[in-house]
Each structure stands twice: as structure tokens, then as C-alpha cells.
Length: 348
Image (cartoon, rainbow, N blue to C red; front, side, top):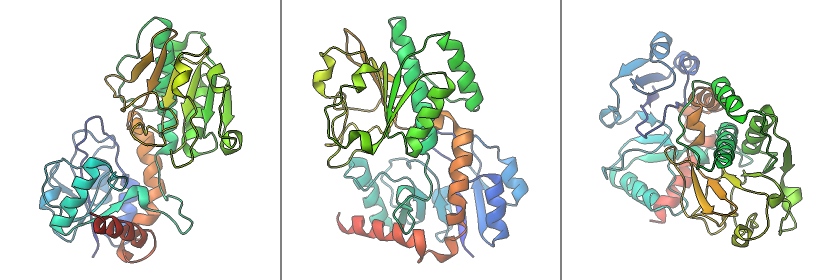
């Protein structure tokens, strides 16, 4: 019997989960054994999983799980260097040359385990089967709007936190806006991330210019970007990605004062916004890269965690069909994810 072990998240500010109680019920009805760890932070209460028939384990007890269990979580494991003998489903951030990613792969190599990276669960066309993109864009646009508003009073954006739901976030923003209406441009507007960003801005009454591949195909420069108050970047950096806001823009005449880099890839050679060098945080959401006129960049790398309930429900619904196929790990999305893991382990 396939045994799935849903672990608690151990990263700070992480309340999301990749499986809802409804999904748990579906997996159990399909013949899977399901263990759910208790969690002091999970956005969805444990009782729902109990009612679905899941076995319950202590928080963070996954290292002692049976060796045949598949450990399922979202974010990083504690970086303690211990070997990893289990099969793990999570976002590994290990295949793009990241220093911490190489250390993670060495732990799998030492323990004999396997990583099924959620970013590399793809269908036959190469499209991801589940992503948090919409809510990353939604939350990212919200924090960028907060960044712009803070500038109006001469300040940097104050610390941010998780919201009970999107309505609470929208209510908070409406109270802060008080009739102020910036202009905004979203690049990557046709994708999941860009759609979320555009929806948030439009819900706040902010006029949005929506660009995608067609509008950026010329390779730049793009003076239209700096003619907006706010710019939200929602595209994944890759070879050939043009620079949307070059270094020279800091000194040049511009209306632009707030950038939301939702894609958040500051250490990439292809970063289209080469104005900053590291991600921002919940405690310090924006970094000022130029003083007069101000130019602030929001680049938080775990934005969906600000809306843990909606983002969990959305992601879990997308992922559930693949989880229902865990009994056939040598096929489909799981086989493709394992092949990716084997390729990168071989390159160590």
C-alpha cells in the first residue's frame, strides 16, 4: 500500500499545505495510507484530516517515518546535513545551481532517497501540473501597492504578515488607499502570476497596462515602463530575457517609484531588473535602490504564504489528480520528476 506522510512545515511564516481534508478523503478512498503530522501553524486545522480518516503523527516526526513512506511537504527541510533516506515531494530549489540546493542533493545521495520536486511535476507538454503563481501575483501586487503608499509618507514599506483570507487583505488595502490611485504596468500579464497581480490591482481600482510576450519581443528599451508609478514583473528570467528596468533608469527621468519583482530572481544572470542583489523579507518588504526620486523594490520569495488558506486550497486542488497516481511512480509526472532528480544527482 502506498503510504503518503504529510509533514508539518518548518520554515518561518509558512502556514500553507499541499493537501486539504477533502483531498485526504479522496486519497484514502483510493486506497492510499495517509499520515498527517500535527502542526502548530497550518492554515487548515488538524480535525478535518482526522475526520477524513488520516492517521495522526507528532509535529516534525517525519525523520522517523517508515522508510517506505513518501514524505510530502512544500518548503525547505531544516539544513542540518542529515542523510535523507525517504522519497520526498517538495520544492527543492536544487536544480539551478543554488548552493543550498547542492547541499540538499548531497543529503539525498548520502541517504539513498529521492526528490520529486514540485516545480518539475509536469505534464506531457512540459506544463507544471500545480503552481502557486496566481496567489504569488495577487499578494505581490498588494505588497508593491503598500510599498508605493509608504513612499507617499516618506517611509519604506513596513513589515507584512499573513492574512486570514483575501477579503481581509483587500479590506486592509482599501483602508490604506483612501482615494489615491497610482498607475501600474504588469509584464507577464497573461500567465498565472500576472493574472493574480492584475486582479488585485483592478480590485483596488488601479488602472493596469497589461504586457506579455508580444509587447516585449523587440528586446527593449521599454520607456513605457518608467511612465507608470508601479511595475510588477511576473516573468521567469531565462536566456534572452531583456532588461525591463536597467541601472540607468535610477538616474533618468521617470514616474516609476515602486517595482514588485514577483518572479524574484536577483542572483540570476538573466535578471530583467538588475537593480538589487537579494530577496526582501516579510520584516523588510522593500529595499530602496535610489533616493531622489525614490525607487523601491519588493522581492519577497514566498508571497503565496501571505494568503495561506486560498493558496493552499488552489494548489491542493491542482495537485490532487497527480497524488492519486502515486501508486504508479514509474509513470507520468512522477517518472518525469524522478528522471530530473537522477540527472542532477548524476551531475554532482
